[in-house]
Image (cartoon, rainbow, N blue to C red; front, side):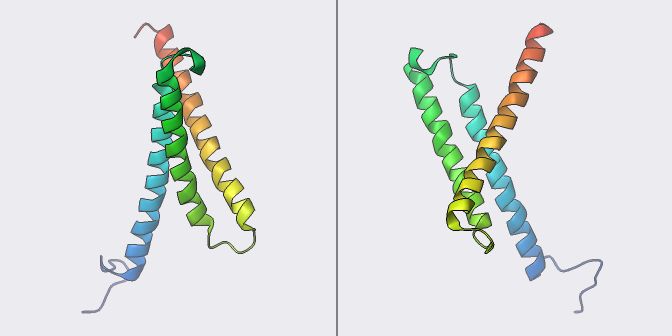
Length: 117
């Protein structure tokens, strides 16, 4: 049966690579969000005051490390930069992602607190 350009077959190689690409990106975003959520669960401002805070920070770093490994694997096929720079870029992407989500979450929490909810 011929394939149409408008309605490609669902099992075509292009469709499976596109879905795998988006699944990988969603997994990276989910890991970054989980790392941010672990930081938001931290019970105090100073990690040395509560032993649970250190465990949550360690969990956040571990999840962020998994996200950095996945980002590094996405950058693996780039031949224009060295492996060291790929690792630095992967860690920087994850740190920026966690920081951005954390900043937005803290602003939302402050807004909700000001409005008495």
